[in-house]
Image 1 (tube, rainbow, N blue to C red):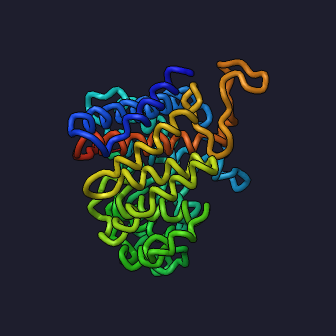
Image 2 (cartoon, rainbow, N blue to C red):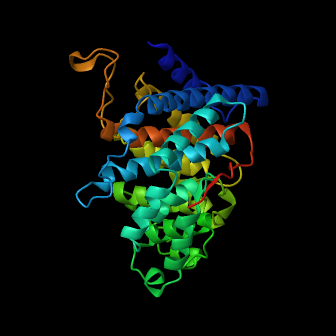
Image 3 (cartoon, rainbow, N blue to C red):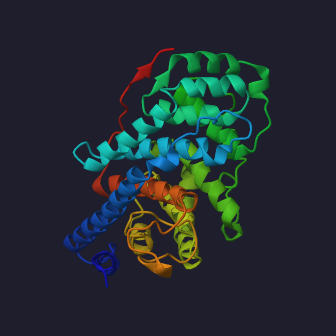
Length: 351
């Protein structure tokens, strides 16, 4: 048994929720330490694998795959910016997350690339959403925002047909950029799988990701839990435990982490028992290098004839789940440690 496995097993044995107040405090502290270790390993892997996030020279060409270039970079910016905002100032993980967001901003040439992208695809939602991740971190580009305001004032922008979940994400992006939302967030939320309080046994992979992102958009990626409506809060508290349990049984590690991030973004008392049931499992699944597979049986060190220092998974098969682990773990640590006011750095780039 490795030291990490022993830590995870001990955290499972010391599950909070029963016994004396002192014992519960000790168990919560052990769980917090475990989640922090998982977060730090995932951050280290991400910083060591920044080459996978580098944008190619032809990133704006029609043949370039957005899902393999701009999407990973935008996710790096979004998930690490939240990690930075909720992590204590004295924690080294905060500085690491800040460096990762700064790297992503540099890849956009301090926002100039985002302006070029907006000019070439003015009515696409994804340039706006990627830029909003940086804006939420205080990194802004005046030229992008001038053009974005003009586009957002058109009828075509207001009446572009979108799935409710994507529209909800765009509304949150508009809020971050400082543009009046083009639709009523509550009305759009109620058209999502989550907002309709769908029968919980109807959950499957696609609806699982739909509900997690609806929750992120409502709570501004976990930093504004007070925005979550009370009925959805009750619904999620009731059903997150069995959903997470099902994901763990079926080796859905990425979706497990996404659901844990939802739980960590709920208002009020954090769902400690949910954290205690799931995080030790993810700690065991996490590769020593720090990455986490999206799905399937985990690959151990030296598996299939590889050496311990070789990458166990292709970058595209683990980068997202590793970033989501950083995101969920950062929110979980923040909730277990107590409330903290998120911060932004307030930087701006003129163009």
